[in-house]
Length: 155
Image 1: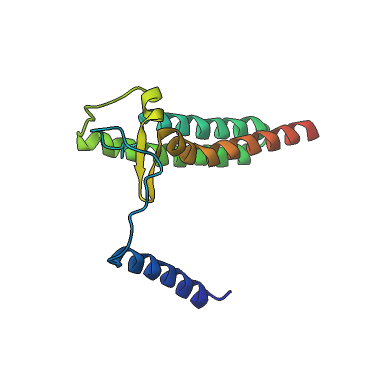
Image 2: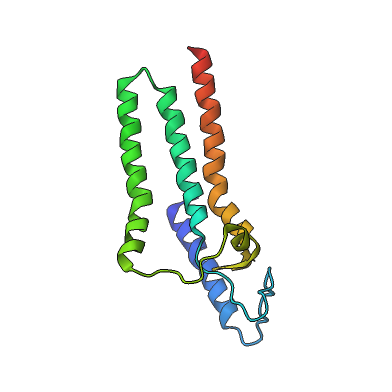
């Protein structure tokens, strides 16, 4: 498919969504998860999810470090990746700290997982939101572990 065809397809999907939203007889979509009475759905991800994401990424770098232990050039690339990971995870943390905004309603992780969480496409549970954030990195960690094991056994 050509690039112009993809751009037209993308534009027409967006236009159809906008037209649907402007339609006067449009019925609101039912919420996937009902919000608690008198309580708005969360819009900020719990810090534990970000800690888990950082842990998964650190685990992946650890597996790479162990896998390429004998190759100095590969370890140099792993070290560069660690610097990028620190920037990737550290920049939002530093921006949050610099803003000085503190959440007053910090809740335990278990409560966050059971509460509704608002996304752009609708309301889901905190468990589903955490799963959406952590599923791909966890799958990559499993794949990297398998590849590292295969490389270690092949030596």
